[in-house]
Length: 262
Image 1 (cartoon, rainbow, N blue to C red):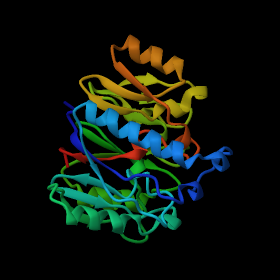
Image 2 (cartoon, one colour):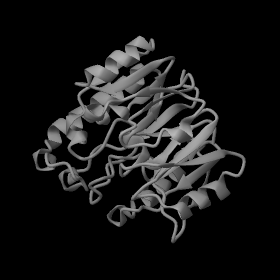
Image 3 (tube, one colour):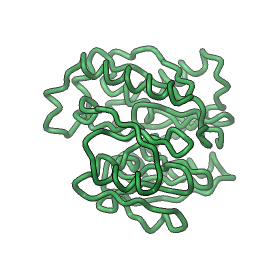
């Protein structure tokens, strides 16, 4: 069982997913049919790992909406509603809160990040003891200040990152261990954690998803980090994530956990 969450929310790719905000030169080659198939495989792996997966409706008109990690950080007691740094994504957070309030999943009371604050879920790394928040192009210091106000009893540590989201460059995999790409994320704030470092040429593989019990979901095609995880006695499941790579998204981007620690 995962110590941080037992349930995640997902949202299938919209019909206009090809129009997502992406700097990847391969974006024009996004295959929507393949993306939908990869998303279904992702859901299957999570379910087979004992995670309860709640599928929210497709949100057409919002090409980035498959990246459900970003609109909110969802907890049992409190839910932090994002204010997007990428303004073209505005509206996704409203749709998510509407979806959550219409269900019976015991999600926490919404607390909103307000202007001039900006905060996106992809910049929020939750561990058993600490929440790390990326200071990025999408999340600013005022957004982090508001988050700290909403979560007064939680240790919150800002982290400088050269990626557009902190979780592009690091992931928490349980056991007090963080997989991290030092080429794009400052490692200094993570003192006290075991760090498994990702080489610069495999940076994309720093975004991996913990499935609990030392099991992790990793993108296929990154042998160096796979070898390091095996050496650290992690059991790996691999998935082809090509169509979301083209959309500048990683494995954690595709789901929004219901965190037990919030």
